Length: 445
Image (cartoon, rainbow, N blue to C red):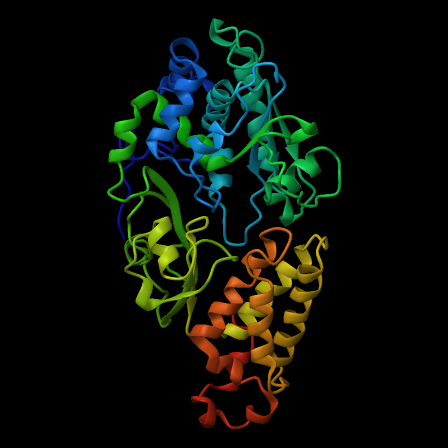
């Protein structure tokens, strides 16, 4: 397995990580060029210059959508009379198999604080909130200490670094709902409302938290900002050989020898991550399939492992890069119980606001449970395929249901014979359906 040698030039996010995995507090962070980007931005740049620099850098959102960060920032109103603005950090990391933001918040809390400070200055936002997954207790403690340290050092609060800019930052813990990863549901929850997604327009940039202009960015996205300002746009673009600039926290989970995550340049192939960093599959296990970026992304096969991990390449293959923390599936795991488990999660986490999602996802779970027991009926697979179409993009109020059916539709596409094995009339005749053994219908984790 490869040994990662982290340097400021190649690993802008993680080079400050300590070997003992303890958090990097203010004194140590500043000794390693911490807040250099903030000092440069607040004392020598205009807000519009920062927005343009981030736009020119090619930084894309790291929460999964991959939208241009600078372009998103530029959508905030130019009207100076709208002096109440908010910057929200989406730290509600509840995607199964994803833990990249947790690493940054627990071990490098000042990196996020600095990223939010620069971003708030660029957006002219006077207050920021880190909307944190409630289960991330250690991250909450570390972030609050980092905020206190920064406030005492004059890096938060009034007239920061003599710039005349005021910015307060708070940690707000969620109540454990996956839907709060959707930015308008997050805003509703922050306001104390039921966590339903909002209709768009209006978009948060014009009417977000408490009806004021609001920008919502992911943890990893904001953590990229300090290095861009400190080292320059050209440097950031040259880290990667891909169309996507910079680095990304990528990883593999599942029954691999060395599950984990690593900061790697865009364009690194999935096979390289799996074999060179994650060590390949455990002894005796054969690789079967993988999800590139979380539970809500389409399965791909071994034939796709040589794809570069970048938004466009994974998209053209029929999936999404998502969070870039992949899950490997081995030959002992049946796709029906695996997908049933995923769909149970998504059905449980539906906010219930729109009928297709509220009723469609539990219906898919019901059919999958029957197939898992070998009691499926003819037409069940076609019904699942119809559900996937009816819950697809543009058919529901938000992106929850379209993401939820991605693993289902792709599992049927690549492993249809395993679903056919669960149909009652075929259950005892495995030869007629490709030799799939009934034990693959049982969960093996």
